[in-house]
Image (cartoon, rainbow, N blue to C red; front, side, top):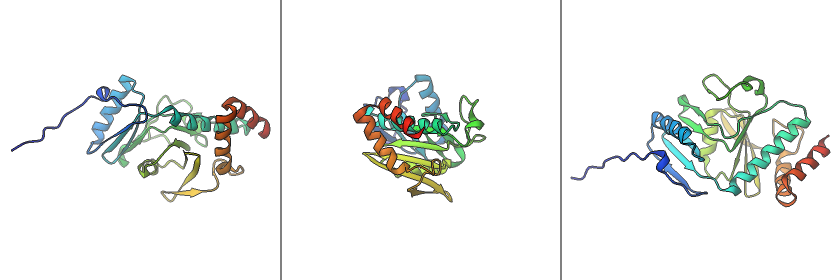
Length: 216
């Protein structure tokens, strides 16, 4: 009789090529937290998504990174013109043990709750609110939105191959919307894809300067 013997592989020994993803199943919350601690020590440049025992680890491509960074610049430019406070928490890991969910957003912001987290070096979701806005690029898995639902993030933007969606949390579920509650007076659904495309053709800095002039 052959007995399967579990093999433990340190996270630092997992080498991912840019653009690749691995899935680990039947992972306990304690194992997930241990991986996060090891990753922090090793300084691994990967993104994680964890939901009820399933962990996805991704190594993003530059083409994955650029759109969400451009969108983040657009968000902060608009907020600055509107003289609204914001705090950028980037790819900070958000996790909630009670929901067995955790994720590294591509980019995220505190806007309505900016003052509540201004002095935070790290977020503790047992006492701190979730980010007001998360931005993701090239999401192909429903699992990502399921995790954000569990973490109760009010608004998630997803940009995938020039397709842009606004997902608003209503009664615990995401509903696609044509209007962003954060920017209700702006045509965000049309504006973001146009500005991202302009950033690729004209350059990000030029696009942002012109956006600031148009809004001032």
